[in-house]
Every structure is written in structure tokens, then in C-alpha cells.
Image (tube, rainbow, N blue to C red; front, side):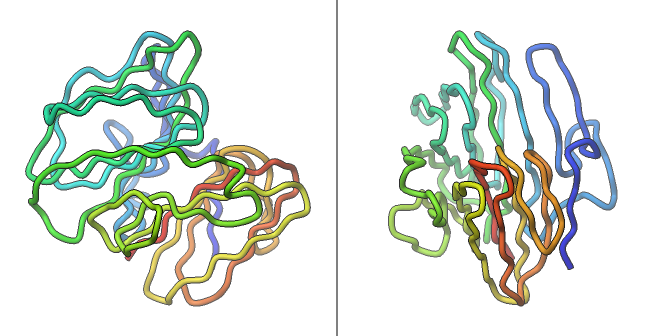
Length: 232
């Protein structure tokens, strides 16, 4: 059973400097039917205005993956890490026993990103942060594992039995994802229009399904840039 969650049905909050859309209950948006999807707890679709961002704030016991769609985000945390992550690239923060961080759009243009929170396998542990470039040319017509707790080569490490993957499809291209029956998959096309199980999915719509069969993504309008999570 595949559920498509149209972008128009997501929770939203416009703070002026931040235009946020929530695939799952977050902050003042609460929907008992959209609390989580397996261990995937948050998928926020954020637009951050130039020269603005999130001031220092705390997190703990969460794997936080940021996928930058356009522009760039600059991160700074209480561990002493600082880095700029640009469009198409990914950063990961394991909050562990607790960390404070700030994220700002220091650019002269809007930054858009997906922020994904996955519950870790175990609470506690030393906090950590990392970032990596993932050229879109390397994932044309194929999945690239961006973050993983399953030992995938080249992926940023997270402390959860989960994978975050990305792919880009040109119009007419197809790509399948197959996983075990007990797992939960959630996918969002950042751009383009795709078809999944006969259902039309627009950019920024959500797709939720559980494992047990191969699911085929077909690009109707490209390039279709797809981001996917596979969790318990």
C-alpha cells in the first residue's frame, strides 16, 4: 500500500525569515495520523531567507540529516565544528547526550533544504557532526547512499538502522527500491514529477510505504531529484 501525501496537505508555518512545511507533526503542527513513519520522526521542507537562520539551540538523542536543495547552510556547534554545506550535499549531526548548534543562510539567495530526523538505535553517546559532497552526476539513474547506519561505503555515518538515499532521474527513466517487509520507506521528489504504483507525485509531495515488494519510481517530468529514507 503506497500513500501519497500532497504538499498542499502538509503542516506549515511562515515566520518571515523561515517558510517551513512539515511532513510529520512538528512544533505547533499536530496530526495524530502523521506523528512518524517507523523511526523517521521529522521531515521538514524549509526555505530560509538570506542572512538569516536558526540561532543556537539544543538537541539530544536524534540523528539529524540535512539535505540542501538550493543555496547553502552554514553550521556551527558546541563541539567546535563549523562548515558550509551547499546544494546537493549533506550534513549529519548525531545529537547523542546533547549538543547545541546554529544554522544560518549566509548567502545572498534563499536556501531550501530537507531536514530529516531519525530516532537512533540507542540513546546517549558522544555527539558528532560530519558533512560530505555528493555530486548529482554520480547519482543519475542510480541510488547513492548519502547517510547510513548499515556500513555503506562512502555514506555519512548515522547511529540508526537506516539509510538515506538520493537519485536523479531524467524523464522516462525508472529506478526501483526494494527492502524487507518490516521496514518503513518515505520518499520526496525535490524536483520534477514522478509516478509510483500508478500514482502521480509532484515535487515536494511525500510517499510512504512499507517494505516487502519492489517499488518502481518513474520520472514523468525531469530531472526528478528524489530523496528517500529506509528505516525500521
